[in-house]
Length: 211
Image 1 (tube, one colour):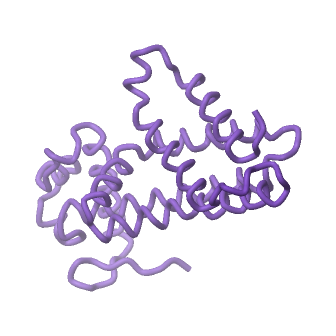
Image 2 (cartoon, rainbow, N blue to C red):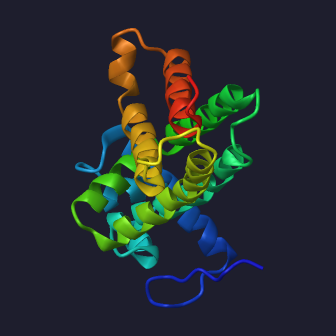
């Protein structure tokens, strides 16, 4: 059973209205990727699906609210990435599994990059709603990464000076920041394969203590 979704006026949305709401979200994501947040207007989103701004405001108070919903959906798509971190990467296939994690993360990022950039920007600007969504998303991976790092410290593979939370945060930050620069890196000869392999090797070394 799925949770009810409500319109702005508090009424539960029916199946036909849900379809319209979905179209508005998809149009928001499309236009966000094409033109960015600064030029994105309700009238543009509405025009994309051939409806009126009044229809948009039936489901969302403003553009930010629609993007916030897209960011929450992205968090749901991020959850399967945790499977790549369990169990740890200490076996012989550890580097390969690190590569699979990075590959999956890159796919996730490429799918949601426009929304994730806005989520992070709004969070950095202090918007508590976007900050909450970003924190929930980051903790999904950071909790699993912390467990891996604690195991490494306990086994003597990693130095005791490593703080698991800080290290996990650094890994997540590295993934987000690096993948955000992919277009610029491609201009300098770094293709997706080299980015994936390099990032996987770096993360593998950080988490396991192996090179």
